[in-house]
Length: 167
Image (cartoon, rainbow, N blue to C red; front, side, top):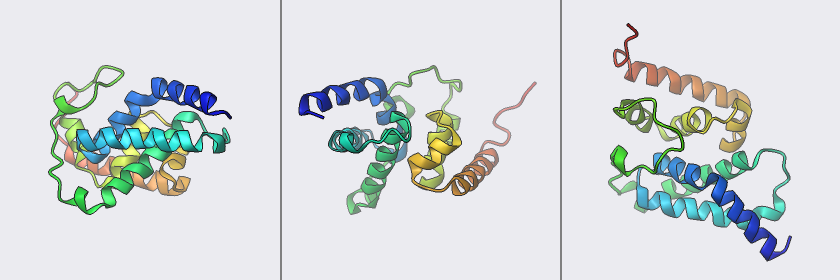
């Protein structure tokens, strides 16, 4: 693929998935500035690897896999461990569909999960990936993905108990 063709393909990917990648990175890293950098790094890595994309998964799954690994790289740095990563919901990038929960309680509960579990919840439920795509994007086995999602759901249920009542 020529540089022009790769650039056009990258522009298309950014148009289609840019907001989702940025929001995912923001929720993962809990810092809007680092999330912006991570989203840009995700697309730079994707541009470099466009020739190696084999269409074994969807483009979204492939990009999410790159974003997951990019966020993990950011989280491993000494700088990241010493940052104040508390963000308020107003600092999050706009979501493509309207939030079903107006008060941010669920978002806070998800953000309080351990990183691995938060990744799984964001990929599976927020990004709408199938279980198989979620496992692929996270770079883990299907069985591990099922266990982590189950554990995350259990923790969320405990943290949100009593928050919502069906009358």
